Length: 429
Image 1 (tube, rainbow, N blue to C red):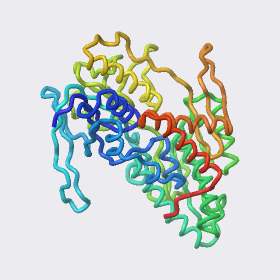
Image 2: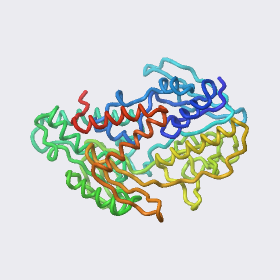
Image 3: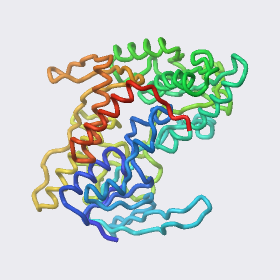
Image 4: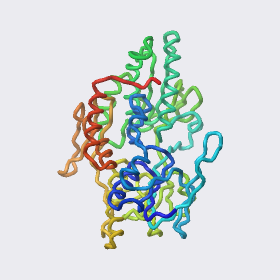
């Protein structure tokens, strides 16, 4: 198989680039490779885990997106790269019984874009890989949801005080959003599924954060507001606390304290996929691909990288942060660069420049908090409440519009959001 532009990774940045480039160039020129069959906006995974968002209703089929946007979809994971021959190898697809559904395939390219995202960084903590769940993909979120359902069903039939202990390691956006969503969902579970469950008593949620405060990269006012909202919801937050050991039923911290756990979520850090070290491309200490300001992998003019898997140094000399808005911006930058290349025009002549528009953190279906970057002297504007929640939802709508190319999708998604807010619902099956 041969394709002029091959994009590996259907996350926020890779999929947006494939859709926009496919709509511009038409069928036959753009190929997207991904190991999953459907796409879901990664910041929504905490809702999938809590059961407040159905992946079957929210997930978008890559095959459908390929049909609607004019690109070719190849199902499978990147297995190998031959940069000299300009080819990649896509791994075979097998059934759980080991039957081959699709064999290994080779795809030739003129330009290759690597957008393979990131995976969990356990920092060498014993037991972390074996006894925790990380929300890296839909299968992780669904595994957490099903495990939680079984634990809640058991807790609802046991005597008072047994309950479920949920420990979330990491007080960044993922950990905080999951805790808030779980607290809101536990009340709905009690009302609609497990009548004998007392949410505050029987669903005990603890966040363990090594930094002096949660949401450490965000302004202190946002962190303080988040801590207050979590306290109101009965979520215990431990800061300046480092985890040293994770067992099947407890978490041990550096101070020697032990916290019981029925289910543990790891949200304490990310790293580049180990596969990148085996592709013959330059990587940095953290395993990310070493790219120029134009997002070109150094020494390989036909290979680009964007998002979490690429280390791009900004004009301020600092690495571009691994955030969804950075991947979105980089996708738009590469879209312009590749279209110019397609038309035989000279390069853009200026490097990618990251622009921070602020951050928003969801606290269930009713509220959010965050900071927005103003255009005057880089000021932060603190936002909270329903207005912030609507702005958080708009980010999701903008992503849908980018990959669908129509305002109609955004309007329908907004309608679903408003209906969801007025109707408490969790997935009980």
